[in-house]
Image 1 (cartoon, rainbow, N blue to C red):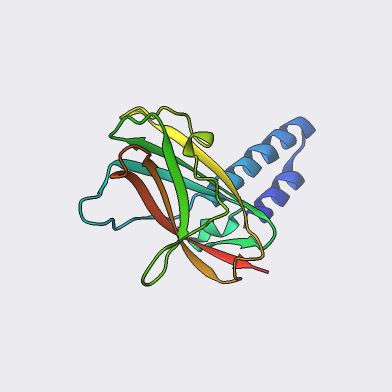
Image 2 (image 1 turned 120 degrees about the vertical axis):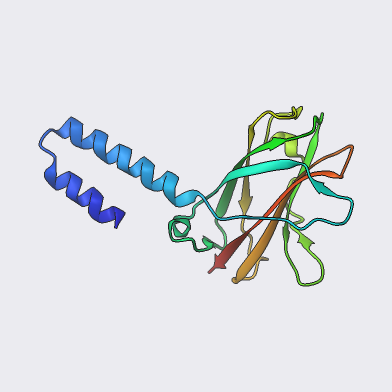
Length: 173
């Protein structure tokens, strides 16, 4: 659909500069629109509360998101996750980790750097919106299948203060 729009723009353009501007704008819209993914809030253990609001979760590459489908990421490639969040707590440092959700236990992605301050600005300030960005290499150790991913970011000193959401990824060969 978007490819047809771009092709139409090129054939309708009379002025080359206008055509270039239009194609850049449409390309940016396609990329931005295609990256936002559907997420669910996590169910957390008793006594642990969701103390933040996560919004606009973006995965790159993820053209499938425009259709509400899980992102397809190829083994050996990188996937980048970005999201905006607002906490209800102050924290000097935070930890972050992705987990593969299981029926009984969630398995952490051990090759992930858990120092959240490398991927968002620390200290975390309550009620201030900020962004987090992490690039993960999809190693050959990940099976080519659907993965339900749980992403968490939490205060290092008080592990009851957490942000948590889940989303789907399809790892492909």
